View (cartoon, one colour):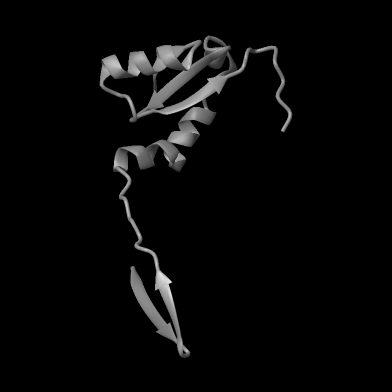
Length: 97
C-alpha cells in the first residue's frame, strides 16, 4: 500500500490493478458493432427468438436456447470470452423497461 500525506494526515491508498482490455473486445461495444446490430432486420432477429446469440465482427457466431450450450459452441469454435452475448426475445414478446 502507498502512504499519502496531506495536510498532516496520513492515508493509505490501496494498490490499483489496471487491466487492459483486448481491442477485439472493445470493438464489440463500439459504435460500429452497435450500428450493425441495430440494423439487423426484424425477420433476421425472429430466427433467433427465444435464444441466446453470440456476436463478433458483425456476425452471429453462435446461437442456442441455453447459455451452457452456447458456451460449448463458442468453446469448440475457440471464441469463448471473445463474443458479445445477448438474449433475443420471441417475436410476440414485449419487454417494458
